[in-house]
Amino acid sequence: MSSLGKLIRNENMKIYRRPRTWLMIAFLVLAIGLMSGLMKWDAGSDDHADWQQRLSQQNAQLQQELQDNEKLDADEKTDIGNRIKLNAYYLDHDIDPNELSLWNYVNTSASLTILVTILTVIIAADMIAAEFSWGTIKLLLVGPASRSKIMLSKYIATMGFALLLLLLSFAAAFGAGGILEGFGGLSRPELTIAANGAIRESSMIADALQKYGFAVISLLMYVTMAFMISAAFRSSSMAIAFSLLFMLIGNSLSALLSGYGWVKYLLFSNIDLTQYLAGASPLRPDMTLSFSILMLAAYYVVFQFVAWLLFTKRDVAA
Amino acid sequence: MSDPVLQLRNLTKTVGRRNIVDDLTFDIPAGEVFGFLGPNGAGKTTTIRMIVGLISMSRGEALIKGVSVRHHFELAMTHVGAIVENPEMYKFLTGYQNLVHFARRHEGVTKTRIDEVVALLGLQNRIHEKVKRYSLGMRQRLGVAQAILHRPSLLILDEPTNGLDPAGIRELRDYLRKLTKEEGISVIVSSHLLSEMELMCDRVAIIQAGKLVDIRSLQETRDSAQSKIVIETGDLPAAQRLLASAFDPSLLTISGIGQLELAADKSAVPHIARLLVSAEIDVLGIHAVQKSLEEQFLEITGGEMVV
Ligand SMILES: Nc1ncnc2c1ncn2[C@@H]1O[C@H](COP(=O)(O)OP(=O)(O)OP(=O)(O)O)[C@@H](O)[C@H]1O
Ligand SMILES: [Mg+2]
Image (cartoon, rainbow over all chains, first blue to last red; front, side, top):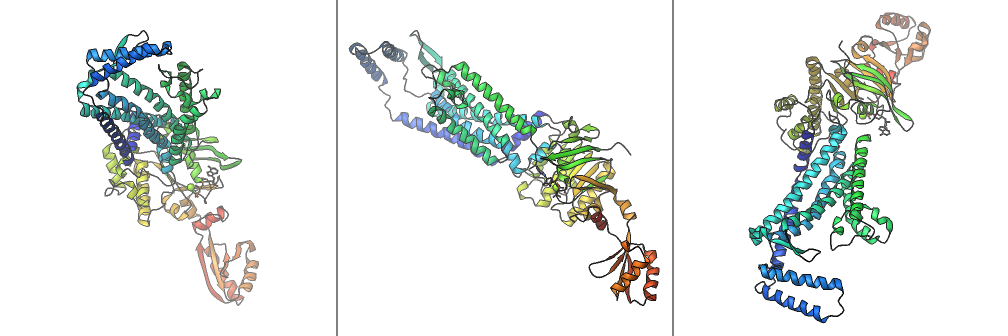
């Protein structure tokens, strides 16, 4: 009887022995390099020499506004107050808020995880359907491994690929940031103002990891969906096309239809959990974080179950 | 004889309302090359697909070395190697990498064993080339190699000679013989080509429209082959009249080229000769022939055999 570990090695071999996979990886690294270069170039066009002077000027203006403008409501007043406090803190501690540190690059790379998601979705959509396209499914299934085990090995290999891309994009951004800004900025804190008005220093790495964390959730959902689609189609190009289509139009569809109450039950309405972070507003007012987590969990289970049914119960007559 | 390697029990596949495999029951003993013979669409591939679990069984059961395919799939499959129709391989991998892929599914297939099988099938020169550059025959060999890596007790080959040249077919045949004699494994070969079956198989099951028509040993079939006497004369109608009165008329037929054929063995030749001569009918030739296996099978399947 086949061991799961060996089956996973087989799936890995089939992923990494294809030139396509390495093109994808090269593409991702290139995109992050390009992004870093653009960030550096953009920051270079600002003049940083007199940043202290500019911050003091800005604070004076804000102070003026606070005194003169009668129409400000309470929220706006605290907001302006917070900005003044933050600027003062920067001046006291000699931190240039506009100077890029390595973490800015890592942070921005977190928004490129959409690329990681797309690439992994392509791999996932291909995972089962390609075996049918190639006709290799027959030999794959005729062996001492249950279909469930084969499917699990394919899913794990897909997730392994996603993990590799995530690590790679983190490392590439970290490397690019370090090369462009030096590795000295590693300990620079991220400043935020808590609800009680106190200034809080948090580590930038935690911030970056949080961004990655949210991205991983949507990645997990999209990839699992693509995997299910892969089990449904017998042609890999169809499976890839449909997976990408759902993924790309899903979000705009949710936004477009957000007027309807039922929209909150769509996968796409729940997939972006950053909508519940402070300062953001959810797609629909009646949606809560726990609701979305519940919905995502439900979708995940359904995707897995349908994929399993499709893969293990159907006749292979191709 | 030891326990049967494969037992089919009322194996049935129903699609819609049609039974494309209908109630097959038979055993295949160890060490035998067993043929599935039947015209196109008879249900050979469907039967094989059920045995290896690619499609579900509508009814019945297949046991491999006594292990139910339906209930203990993984265990049953440790005893089986198979190619079903064309063995498609991963084209972007080399032949060797393909074999490694399939070897990993089994316990105890060593590197030495892979090399051994590669040599056995004569693939050693090109085994490290990508499969997309292989010819059809080479892919077929790679398919067989993949199927025997783990020394199965039952080797199932669906149309294995597809794409092989005559030398390749002969090699395959010799190799199958060797496997059955030396390792005692059983082989199932499906084909609609009787000529192949004749040389390879010990027994054949004849399947038609999903049903088992007959199982026979080829040796016995050869021994019991009926013979007929072909008679060529100058006056066909007169000869026919004469022989119809002397023999059972139902044994007498006229072939397409105007020869009389009488189902009888050659001891009847002198009698026929005397009859014709005494009736003053010109005799151009009389000879006895054995019915070929092909003709016999055509009779069994009602002339539908695609040969
Ligand atoms: N999935 C299916 N759905 C419906 N009918 C099918 C299916 N698969 C096979 N058949 C039918 O079942 C019959 C048997 O097909 P099968 O492929 O088993 O024949 P075969 O004996 O292997 O023929 P060949 O010599 O051409 O390979 C055919 O009539 C075929 O059309
Ligand atoms: Mg067939």
